[in-house]
Amino acid sequence: MPPQVERILEKLNEKGFEAYAVGGCVRDSLLGRQPKDWDITTSARPEQVKSLFRRTIDTGILHGTVTVMLDGAGYEVTTYRVDGEYADGRHPKQVVFTPDLLEDLKRRDFTINAMAYSHKTGIVDAFGGTKDLDGRLIRCVGNPVERFEEDALRILRAIRFSAQLDFSIEKETCSAVMRIAPNLSKVSKERIQAELTSLLQSGHPEKIKKVYEMGISQYISPAFSQVPWQSFQVPDSLSSEKYVRWGAFLRMAGPDMAVQVLKELKMDLDTISRVRVLAAWADREVKAEAEEVRRAMSRMLPEVWDVLAELNGYGERVRCLTEEIRDRGDCLDLKHLAVNGQDLIAVGIRPGKEMGRALEELLDRVLENPERNQKEVLLEYFLKQNLAGNQEA
Ligand code: ATP
Ligand code: MG
Image (cartoon, rainbow, N blue to C red; front, side, top):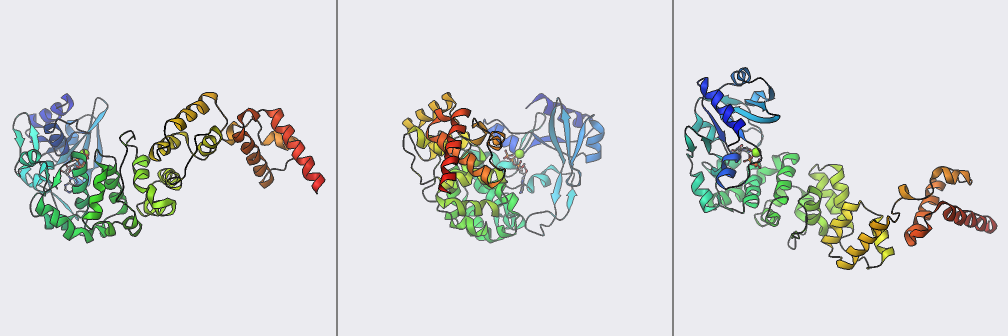
């Protein structure tokens, strides 16, 4: 446990409150994994938490969460609570605080996420969380049908955790997933997207296939359910960046469907545009020739090209050519062209469409042969072209 967490627990204990590390950090510690963050649960009310620490942030005061800042990092401290009715299949209607740790643990989604720990008490495991860690099982706390009815997002959380931890989903929890799947259509697309993104960024992204095999995909979005998923796999060499994993998953869908899926899931535009490129190029061959490699590289960001080359299996020779092109600094875009708009205005080109066409034409010449990327060479070519054009006219 980080010393800052110890200090927070001690301070709360000193004032007579109960306090524990809880949820993901307990699970990950027991698994020997590095917890992403440390959440604390306490019998103290938010105002009481705030009064005990110098720097706090009202993160979700209505839900009982105060962030305590220590040594530049934040720790979420949340008052023991019972969640009220889930009216929309997602948000608790009201939050009720409770003095009882067990009540707080009972509202949590899975047994492995429902454990608390303090040095004083040791592990509090009321629902068989350690046993399920041993058995590598995702199992709901309580009745799985009811728990998924309360909050259908938990359906995707179950699959997401099974991908992150490489766990199976326990049988009854599994049946309930399939039975309550239709309720997912009530869950916000942003939340769904966040879970699917975590799943794809996990150590077992191929487990997204479960979403299809378990009959859930149609409740995520119409386009999502159409994605050809059977052949999906992620090469080990690829990073876990968001666009890389979504690109690997959606490339076989083609650019239009890929964009549709991501739009329906309210994905950010930068990710959409990168994935669109990966999907548009998924079936394009690129010969191991400098010019062809330059032309492909000129159509996308450098890092997207590297990912595409990996996904499409362009191989060693294309990789070498890519490196040579970068080492030489071959011009690949208008920004690096040896002439700019001003230069062309000086030789009589009008700004606007004509200018755009002229610059594209020069870039095309330079992609063919990068040695042409010199001002005099390009302008001379241009003047000649223009004369020829005028004579034709
Ligand atoms: P991660 O490492 O991905 O953050 P985590 O277990 O910390 O995993 P969070 O989404 O950060 O997951 O949630 C923190 C804790 O809150 C969970 O461990 C779980 O106890 C509880 N929790 C979160 N979301 C839900 C939910 N939808 N229903 C019930 N309990 C939840
Ligand atoms: Mg967390």
